[in-house]
Image (cartoon, rainbow, N blue to C red; front, side, top):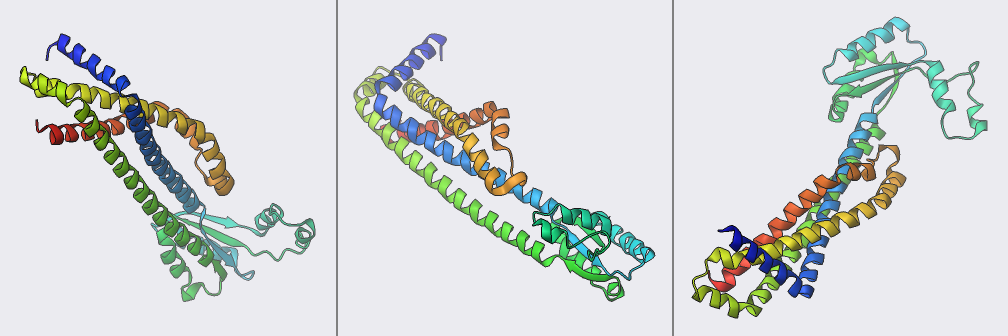
Length: 303
């Protein structure tokens, strides 16, 4: 296609975009809403994955030791644990360290003063971190072996395991809900754009038939619609990115309030990747908008 012809049909596409102002506005808003929902779904998964990973890294097995256990026995037990390939880190917590942690707890001063250096009932312990949280069951099973019974007072793991399982269940449910909502909005967007293009084709059917009569190629007829759809995708991506950018501060505050230090800083994450996110939204919006346009043209004009 010649450069002059390209310029003309591009100008025609831009003219059609502004001439069909209300239809273009409806398409842009629907497509922007779809892109926002998809982005929120992706962002939500990032938050869930990041939070899950951070929580998993913090979850460990605390092995509380009997006061009668000797230093040699404790060192031998730690060496045996370190030999496991599924163990990432092993840390010994003395009575003094346990007392220091006790004093940092968010409890009343009266309760804190019940434990002192002279009267310290807090047990020594070994904290075991696994490479993969799924390996914790096997680690605990090995620690419960009969030859360790004289050393170990108790193992704190069941509560942590329940937390992991609940977190996994919530993650799976949230991902399914987000995926369903995203698919619904994509379908709504496709239906709206298909019907809008159908209406646009119907209103311009006379001039299109004249183009065909004088021998215009399919590409010459298609291209103004493609340009119009690309503009819709461009404005939709711009609107979606702007609204997400404005709302990211409040989303970050909400996730930090409920998830604390384990949450992902979404505001910083979004700001550092805003151009990449805009480009991804524009590409996705173009695929939806231009794809629907081509399907509708082929279907209703039989070209």
